[in-house]
Length: 88
Image (tube, one colour):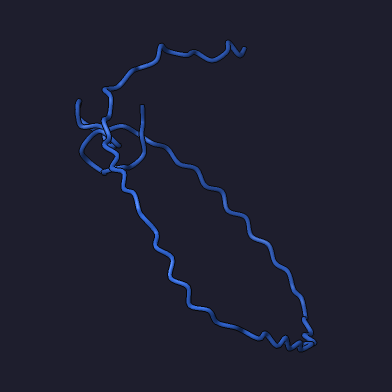
């Protein structure tokens, strides 16, 4: 008998603070005129194919386990793997 899915209360992690730097640019236009003539060429390539098909089947699965010591969670706010997956 299927009894449904259990959901736990959310776990709120410490805030990650980021700093954004903004820069502005002033553009001073300098105009250097030029002219281009385009000549279009067209070639027909007749390609003959001898098709053959095969098939192969691969099945894969993966599991993620948190084996870190307390306070050592890898991810955006902790040591370990830098900006790796976030297992919250």
